[in-house]
Length: 327
Image 1 (cartoon, one colour):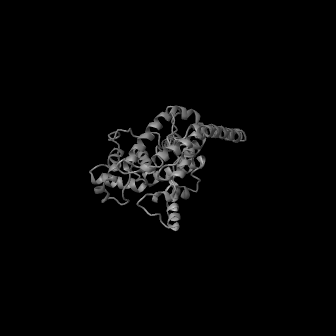
Image 2: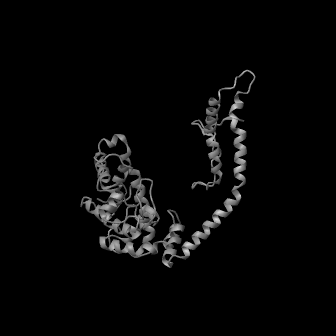
Image 3: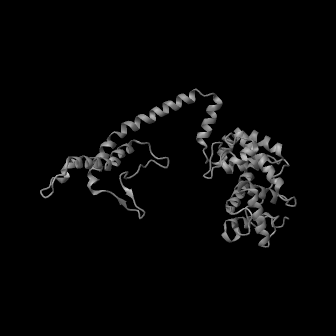
């Protein structure tokens, strides 16, 4: 329908020519979203699945309803029908081209790069632990052993931390912005002088960082509680670990015993307890889960290799009452 046809009724006078032009431009602007919508069926699927927007022309409301202009409904359906008709041919052509391009790129890589690319593509933040130990750990075991030797640690402990943090994936990134195989923050990586996105450097930096956390803990804390608290500090920071120790004292517990500190850590996210802390709120519950997970991975790695006599050879059990007699 032309813009002038809106006024072609017996009881409505046609507007001046300038008004017709203005109204035509207004209609054109109003229908731009419809024409833009033609491109949507040709776009690749979302990373979260293969489903495209159910209705790209609808306005979603907070109550779950959709607002659609009734006058455009039939036109919208026809436009989408025309657009979708051309999708199958494009959908078949583009993946074939992508496969050919990737194949050519991989063929030009040296053998070591090809192997690393295949490992990275298969193990991207998830995987079966036994499979990862067989396929991925050999790529980094030497780095774990060297970093542990330099810092007086157990390489299996460092490897367990790395698996919990990234599944030994040097390209991993968390929602909070930490990156790399050992999930170092930007500031920590700068202080350590390492490239956190380089797997080997990330491991070496994490070894020095964890050893430094051991050194910041009060000397009276014994093993295995000392290692558990160092790991909690690795996850949430030494300041928050010290806050949890203060909360433990306020609750009548022993701040040198992991089982008591373990119970206090989740309280760092409680508004009432935050008033008593020095370093503010923290996700203390995540630190507890982190230590428990590292303990489990460490136990499984320990079955692969003999003890080395380094720090971290033992960790408290996940049960908060474990190690209650150690002071």
